[in-house]
Image (cartoon, rainbow, N blue to C red; front, side, top):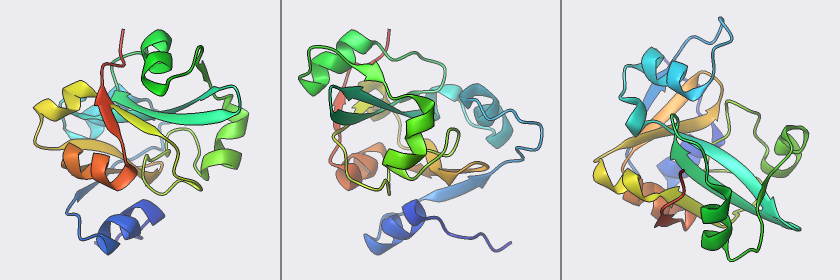
Length: 157
């Protein structure tokens, strides 16, 4: 089956980074992380969600396991900000080029400082959104960090 490549996949191709695409049916509206992990048959600990937050005018990207919650204090510490707040959903598309449920850490409109939950390093591969709802990409977390300039650190409660 031919898949239409997203910007995120094209960027990985351009850097020669290997990945596996997982497609899933989103007709039921269940696009939250644990449902996606179940649909693509992966352990939820290895499926990560991409969250965008801001500290004042600065935007930051946080990549954490789908079953976890971002610890805003840890996120602020990692980013060097006094306080971090989640970017309002209405602003996500404007600043990243992505929509909720299809937000990839790769291929945003701009390369924002990115932080990946340190537990990602325990796995050979993790899955993140490939840039559209219904598509995940599975790749080496070190390759993802290299592609996004990300730092691994503790980010979850």
